Length: 136
Image (cartoon, rainbow, N blue to C red; front, top):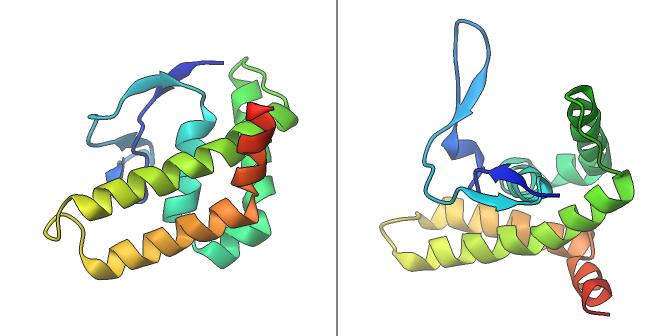
């Protein structure tokens, strides 16, 4: 399943309209045709508190799937969870690349926080196992 993804869907690239509560994205440099779980995983892993995400991660994925179904698109939970696990690796990789690009680009405090979130998620969802399953 491919869709248009933002590709860099962390909280800093999201804006909300006061008037109607709708949301949108800034910084469209990484737009691509990808699996929808790319943006879901990237956003949740880099934008949510790790402890909260550990408690609610599967429920958040299920909520996304319900919203997707309401729009007439279906994706099984098994497929979504597998892709979520794989895209956890993308979240960590992209973040490390960004954090290492320049000391001026990403301050140390936020870099350490978000890298720790991504590293915890990669371990928690067994992204390595998902990658090995894909290779097999």
